[in-house]
Length: 370
Image 1: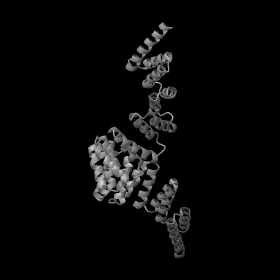
Image 2 (image 1 turned 120 degrees about the vertical axis):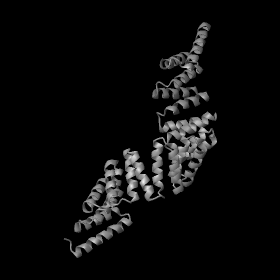
Image 3 (image 1 turned 180 degrees about the vertical axis):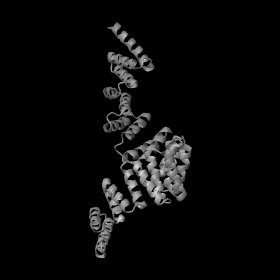
Image 4 (image 1 turned 60 degrees about the vertical axis):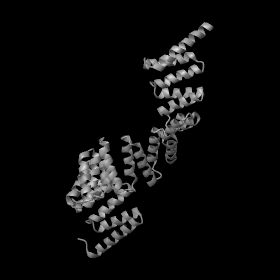
């Protein structure tokens, strides 16, 4: 039994811990809560708050232990069950998370956040129909909840029900017009449906909300490129690469666009940057070889094609193009040998067969002339 004086001291530690938490002095807050526990060890809220602090510090094991202690003291605490479930989700353990949220719902069946979190746990678990049911329950309890519509949309998109997903994402946008995520997913779904003009508008809206939204800029570039609007695609990709300078695919796409515009020198620089980030980037090495060939920089083209063949020995286009470059260098034997390697992989390779016949004819002429 704790007397009144001791309870007063415990309350002082409790209030001190709350004050430290407001000041983000987490270690001091934890210490104050433990001091309170030494005096009064049967206060569930102390253990719940300790769990929140440990979770914030990334110590998920101690967070779980704290929430379990809170539940031991107050089995009907929906807050503790909810927080425990959230930590299990952070740990990648959807099954115990589901049980925790279900226990919380039994105590508090009309708490939309518990149903939402249970839906997320089901979604992580792969129980998609159960997840949809929970998110639909959230909408019943809280019709303005944009996240519930968004999550249903993401499941429907995953299942390939794109038109239905589109409807859900639009509902999410209507409820949260300043949230970039629904606009972005709406854009992705529209793009998958081939509705590129509408997709562009959705991605543009996402970048207006967050000008640093890399994926939205990247996807704008992708759609503009499909529409052959190369200048707009280049602008979008350049924004993406500025925001994320470590993404090899963006550099590659810029190189490809400049190559399509018949600007191989600029394309080469972008391809080289892609390869610097990702040396085994299959298409970047191959297209670097193509760009060097266009520039008639044959030594560099040979090096690029050979790197590509090391990465992908069965890349018949790289072998064939390498053979053509060898021929342009006057190395007919190497050209023929390389084309024969192509035909070992694909005996019906049309381009390789065509060049091989021509090169052998040229070889015969040279032999006769000599």
